[in-house]
Image (tube, rainbow, N blue to C red; front, side):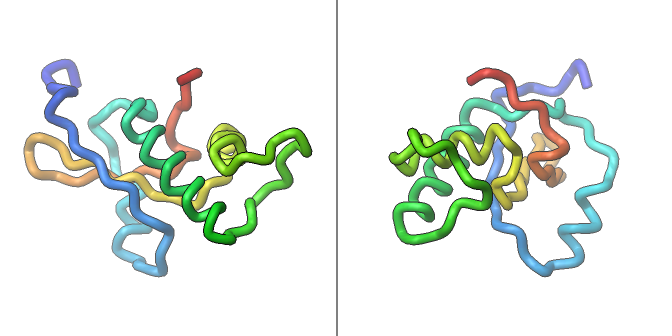
Length: 108
């Protein structure tokens, strides 16, 4: 894990699907660190806020003071209720898949 170059990490955000192959890979042994990066955080917030703006109902009831879609998306993410799988492509061309429950979300 020490020789892994973090700058070469590439990640995609994919929605939950009924693809059993991806769900099996969620439990594989991981070699990257289980932290949500600031790039993944920004991408998840953007996608989720766009969905909420387009009419998707929030998966949890946000406080009544949260009216902007970005605030609601951030609240949903911090509660780890956003239904997203993160696909990280490692430098050795191996993909790792994470759910938000498997990642540590620092104060970004």
